[in-house]
Picture 1 (cartoon, rainbow, N blue to C red):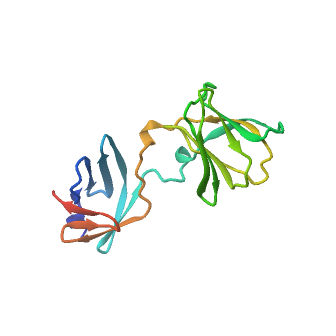
Picture 2: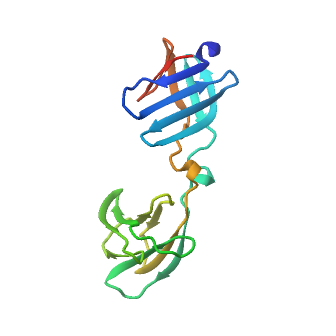
Picture 3: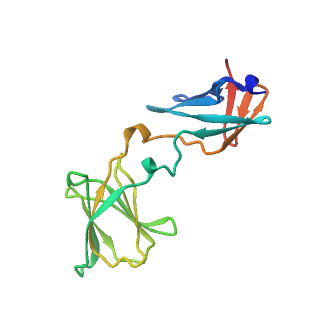
Length: 193
């Protein structure tokens, strides 16, 4: 069965500028290449054959240290302000204009505002679960607001490794092999080689 599965497969979709292919080698290694408009990438990993299914696991997994969101809380003070003052900077302490700051309650955004040219934003003092911040190509910040009694904070965002900015993970991803096709829950790949 494994020999029949080895080969190159293309995603059966007809959308301009979007596509992917999956190459399965005879040594249990796969290479997944994808393109979505101007963004593209490659994932390498291992696969195993279980009956008429294959199971894919990428070399990198979402819980690897490389993918944990990193940030530093540089300043946290209680200054009796009417709002929560947040400043977002990079590792050289340069302000990020246009960083997105959100207050969330149960995974829903209840307040959103971007930082100004000084990297600062004022957020209302309301009951929320978390304060979140993001800037393009940098790690996502989520700070629990449980027992958070500060109203003047500075956050340093860490730059993401560009190699993994749009990485596609495979964690026990199952595809069924049938009629020279690999069929998943949302995708269908057709064998071409």
